[in-house]
Length: 356
Image (cartoon, rainbow, N blue to C red; front, side):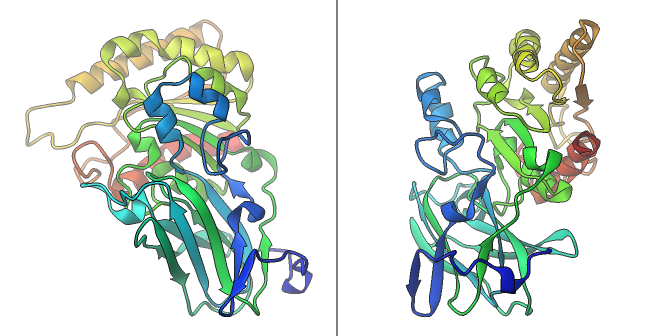
């Protein structure tokens, strides 16, 4: 970072000082991963006007903070957080509270993002030290918000003698970010921490922000969602919807869904992602027939779009997403962190050159 601690803005005042800690409201630091500013609350993922358009489950899930993050620069020897959640349901039966409702902190070291600490939720309101005993010196940090819970408020605390500053804005294609639309897999089920969904892993690897538009069980390329996505101006769109779609949907929806986005964004690359291969085969009767048919329908739609003259389309096959060893999921469908890392590598390989 070019910013020196001496140049940190002395007028960037904390919202509260108590017991030797200065607390900064994350909204003043600047939230990343939000597609819209005309939201009902600062931590929502759809604009308020979408409430009357999308189905109620989609609207409810849009109040989860998946993909939203905050970057900041500090020289603090320790970093704490206090946050208030919308829901008292902190965990799920197959996904831990650290992923559903926790915070996930990363630090930039020699140009790479490395894990630094976690905020484990204790209830609907929590205060926790994310990391202590930090090496001296200023550095940039990235804090990921909960994947499957909503946030009402979030503050970052540092010792009062330390300095804090919003991180520099991202520039170029990385500043535009990547929009990922799809299912519970996109939203982050079942990552162990808030930064371990594949969109978030991919964002760190590409050093760009990600707008997570994953809606658990509710991301089947609904045509009323396409105009909202088309309002965004990212560097890349990634569409990963097939696990939420039946075979008929995969015949009918991909072409008009892509056409709506392409009409509004004629030059933005669009990446279509096949369904993952359901795990457990070869020790179980092959359960992948349905996914294979849906993948074939998506491939046919892709070819038709290209033949009709739609440019800037890219395609990721599903068989390579989770790896060959059946270690990529919690329940044969929702990825483990291993599965998410593999998905991020495969999809990121397609997205990376599109950011240049």
